Length: 479
Image 1 (cartoon, rainbow, N blue to C red):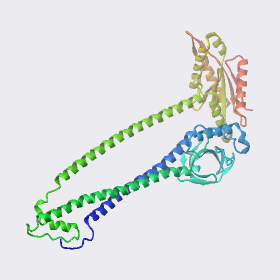
Image 2 (cartoon, rainbow, N blue to C red):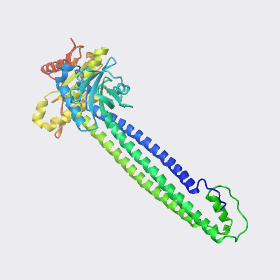
Image 3 (cartoon, rainbow, N blue to C red):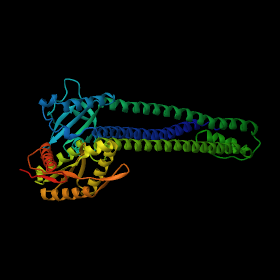
């Protein structure tokens, strides 16, 4: 030792360098994880809101809400039924603040139904004055706010979806309160703060232990080599670092032949590192397998849900016996065509067909045979109409054919072909077969009349065909 004053010890240098390095690495990773968690949570909330709105939108038919335009409609059965539906859905999810249906007219947005149960509930026809881009987009496609929105009811994050049959005029919205969103983000911030504190503590402990681990052998080596090597070796290694390395250099000049050290420790460290790497790979493989299995189950659940939705739709729109459209389903088709006809001036026709003496078949051969004849009749009609036409079971043995863009002359031709095909049909009855005939009432839509009026004219024409001897047509031109 030359008596020079050591300004900063190696132990402190090691401690500071490792502490800063570990802190920077752990802090960078923590920041990345925190940012990713925040983005993932927000994306998850947006997806959850838009998915919930999309799911609920499938349960509401906008065509049933067209007449709800003001406070006077607050007692309408359709309004009350849909209000109860929205409130039941809201109560089933504690994260949801409000659910509402809105209508867009002339660039302005109005409330139709609001699930709010407080005095601040929006009434039918109240205008919504806030201009929210995601809400505007929700009339056409699924969407969600990219930031919380302020209005007179509070601050919310919302998801939107267009209603079935809404034609870009109706949407359903679901609000989540901003304080609930903030609570979820607060949990991430708390976790991030805890992670930061743990990172600092880990950096301090790791740096302290590492610095002590390195400096202690150096000091022991300096003390020991100075003791046994005093005056035995000649020569000098000159070091001017101003720290413990200079002391080590003085001792090294006396103990140069004894510096073979550390090989076993290095080998053990390499083995420990390899074992840690193998263990990490095993954990990653196990976690990957768990994620693959979870993803498989999720796909399976989605497929089962889609199948259930398709079965429900078929049950709601088709006749259980013939597989044809049922009366409510074909009425919706005809009402939509009436709206189109009122705009474009197009026309359509209806054929109301009734199997002649069908009751005698039921009485003679039984209802099971009658059911088979109805199925055969429905299949025959399906094969004699165009792809854009619709065939439905109207009731009992009455079958209705909807012919869009078809005047009376064209409808009469189609009805004649059907009547002729029925006459050629040999329907299976018990061990044999019987011939069928059909009487058909033909009516062409008149602008301004309702569905019921048009069907009533077709029914009157059908009765006239039956009274004139069956197996014939009855025509009803628009007045």
